[in-house]
Image (cartoon, rainbow, N blue to C red; front, side):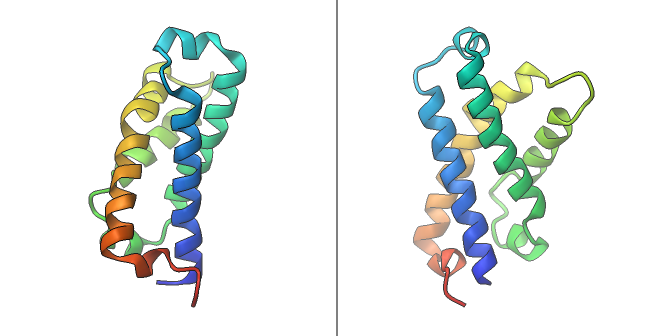
Length: 119
């Protein structure tokens, strides 16, 4: 893979870790009542959504366990007129982000060349 691919995977990891850090120990009501936390988490989730959307098809084929379709669905829900669906955002925070990070760790261990920033 290319240096760009390694950078994209690094962006996914970094944004995902930020989401987990911001939301650690929060219940849904606490999250949605905190404007600052919600804004920062949504910013990081949007980074993840856009990065996943721009991932090359060959990368997606090499990493089939990552829920690329789930990221695309979350993207659609975040861009709907009238804001976002809270259930979708919370699903992203509690399921999609942690699962993606887990698989990225597995792939980093098993196929470190995907994460290389060297061409």
